[in-house]
Length: 186
Image 1 (cartoon, rainbow, N blue to C red):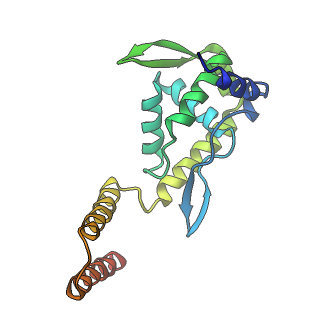
Image 2 (image 1 turned 135 degrees about the vertical axis):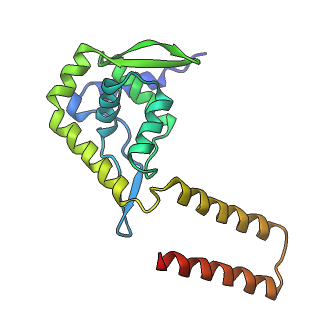
Image 3 (image 1 turned 30 degrees about the horizontal axis):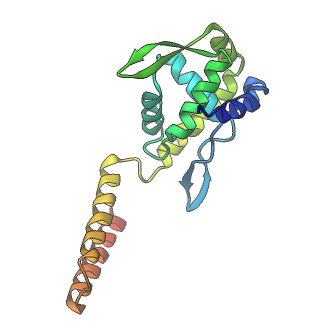
């Protein structure tokens, strides 16, 4: 049996005007040691529509573009992007242009282009905020992200092999302290 509960969710959001609807905004970025919203409620709808207006895209491409635009600080999940795309399509703001590798590609409709033009200052403000997040992101470099993940993985793997001797604990702590010092001096 097919689950239609997602239609209720989309219909609830589509009752609102373009400027007040949307899904997402719960992903967070870091700024000065405090957590802040990367996107406010409803912003993802504007962002996806603007990205599609720039270049017809499918969901995965849109997720990747957002991650790149924020320097890796934000990547929306498929569970947020695809329902938002379905909502934009239901509202007639985007339309499918075909499929590529099983992925539905979308382009902006005339109604979508008009809605974007009407909301231009809002959309520009959202993209300015995303650019600021990318500039602020200490994790903007994929190389830094990779290195951090490598360190976490190495520690987890080593600790999973069993108890450490006092000498091993000292060696690991010294290596981590040395790395921390080098990062601080950079």
